[in-house]
View 1 (cartoon, helix red, strand yellow):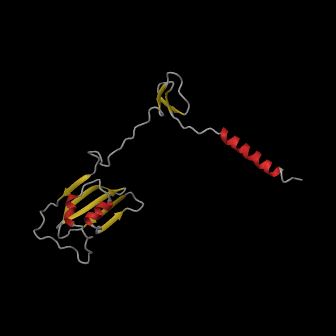
View 2 (cartoon, one colour):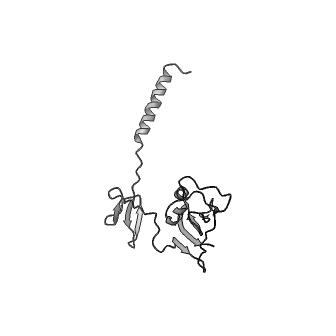
View 3 (cartoon, one colour):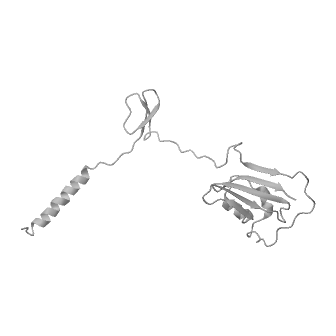
Length: 176
């Protein structure tokens, strides 16, 4: 049978044992060392390098952070391209198709000429409004938006190609 006096003693002993166990736990350390391997190639490990084999201690010499621009390198196959038909366009421009909803406030068809690769879909929507036709997108990484000729941009079909939400190509084609 347990007496009332032994319960507090057991709790005190348990608390002391718990504190002692927590005191023995050492903090985890995650240091990475870059060492020269047997053939001179870099080897990354969590133990200090043997004498004369240390190439880098990341605690003493942390790596630098590099930031890459979102602009594609020249000649990467992205850019603006204008094409024209074999015959010159007629003097009269076709009117905009009937039944089309006007572009969003602040959006202008005249802005189509000034688009450049690198901007995102939201910026295009703010400048031009919603496209007349869309293909791709969703789970696919590539999407194509087409803007039909309008009064502010007569006789020109503008097709935008997006990859992962970024504009990569602007194609402007003169139509009759």
